[in-house]
Amino acid sequence: MARIAGVDVSLDHYIGGERVPSSDRFDDVSPIDERVLGEIARGGMPEARQAVDAAEGAFEKWASTSPEERAAALHRIADGIEVRLETLAAVETEDNGALLRSHLHGVMPRVAHNFRFFADWLCQLRHEDFETRGHRNHVSWDPAGVAVLITPWNAPLMLETWKVAPALAAGDTVVLKPAEWSPLTASLLADVSAEAGLAPGVLNVVQGIGEEVGDALVSDPRVARISFTGSAPTARLIAARAAANLVPTSFELGGKSPLLVFRDADMQLAVDLAVEQYDNAGQVCLAGTRLLVDAAVLDELTERLVARAGSLRQGDPRDPSTDIGPQITRAHVERVDGFVRRAVDDGAEVLLGGGPNTDLGGLYYRPTLLTGARQGAEILTEEVFGPVLTLQSFESEEEAVSLANGTKYGLAATVVTGDEERAARVASHLVAGTVWVNCFFVRDLRAPFGGSRQSGIGREGGNWSFDFYCDVKSSVFAPGGYRS
Image (cartoon, rainbow, N blue to C red; front, side, top):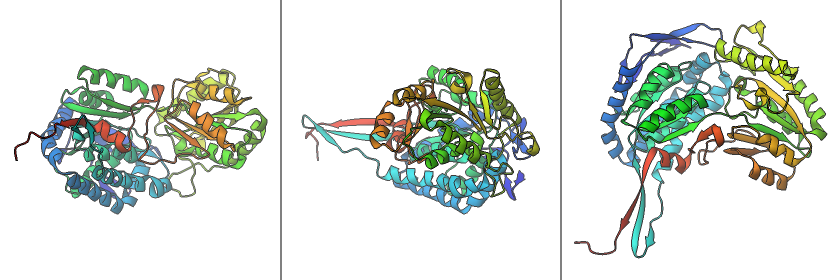
């Protein structure tokens, strides 16, 4: 156990309803001040097998429970999250460095909502029967089996429950592998699920390094579904393991999203939305980091953006007045800085920031704005995953769309315009799983979520989640011929 933000958190795995240690451990380091929060159990092949054993053993009973029973269990988990909301927020801030105020007012309420939404959706999940030449067709969603869920560090509990909730609602049993850089709230989720009465083995949490325990989990032939959020290189490795067993996968792999500002846009709104892309120290997969601005308003937007972003307060994420916290690890800071230094060496100009904030220690990177990068440059095509925005101009709507679609990614896009027809026209031509017009990060769990191109495979949300986590069955019944 470790005492984090006044809360006792188990550092061991949660398998089959019990805490399971490992002989190997690894340090969990807080990005706030680089202190060691605890030594986390480092799982490998034995723990992976044990977790899949437990999930497989619990599957038949959990899958046979009624939708109403499963929904009630998910609502009890949501109740437990809401009771612990402040605790979960404080622990996650210590663990991943995101703003405490964001966790309190946005992230943790969404965590509870994830469970309530999929519980309620399960109870109304149906497809109307239909007739084919006098035969009745009936569509049903059958639990698939053991689901392995591998999640990232930037919004740990929200993204974990975005997968766990629909998988459990679908009747699958779960093995959750949280990111090694922010594993603590996943451990607390296991406690909440136990208090909610979830049977042993229905939810298991295995901690460790991706290439060790993660590889063992996705290679297990008993696994029925794999959902992963992270990088494209890791997804390729997982896909190769899944292919050997023909296991369906769902991947969300980040992106290099554009934010397009047209000359008829509300400039205040455009600046507000651009500054919002620095949220969570730029560690947001959906962030519109490529600002594409009509040349007619480029100077105005640039001046206003530099002034506004330059006033952001960077510091301790536990302080409610802080706007930007730290990066997740020292290695990640070096990665972000490497992108910026190479861009400058390649001809880009720094308008704001451009390096670490050494006044705050080693893990804080200043909000950065770059301009003048040549088309096709690394800084315009590769995901930095830090507080780094680039600025480009365009002369026409066609050029704007071409620039926006000019990467291998396609997760999201944001359009700022005062012309409703232009908004619809541009949105229809953008390659992206989600397009926001005159807004950002408005998410509804009824909507499909996922990426195009190398930003992912598949969609989740609403029926799309159940389509993935279930075996969708069509039963056809002939008329008559039945004995009473």
